Image (tube, rainbow over all chains, first blue to last red):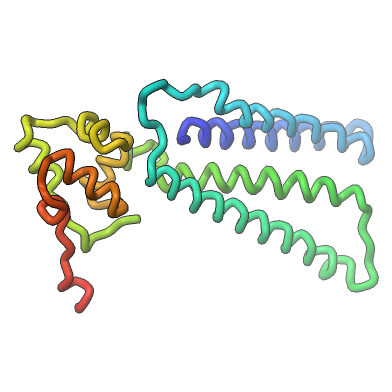
Length: 140
Length: 75
């Protein structure tokens, strides 16, 4: 579980950094509508989902027990809690910035959804690593 | 997850049982070695089922492995 969490943290950070660099570069060169294409680099985060294929379970060996389940459950709670707060903040910001009669483009909605999803998995992975200890000192 | 009130004798019992390794105890109890390390260090309080499995691995009663310090709660 720790290896998969590390994989997801690394791939997510790489995806966010690559996307930010691409969007900034494209914005400087082509302007705003085309700069959004830089978000395609967020696809790097998808590699994190390949964790179960990369780190295969050793047969006949206990790899997950009650403590791992508890850690995973707490991490999931942290992940969803973080996403809830993020979505809440994103919903409130336009109200205070644009005012009660302001409006935003609907193109923000899928981006908010994608951001919330990535945020959930990222917070989940970080919470797993924190509970085990960054270097697995509680375990290894 | 840390539980300072729950003390355990796992380390002593391992050495009294032919210097049993944490891995061997983990295999007998059906958990990972990391969980045995966490329990032994008092960082994780096991479920009642797991506590029984650990006690069975040493062929002793559960209270010979785990002791609950009640005084700390009253302070």
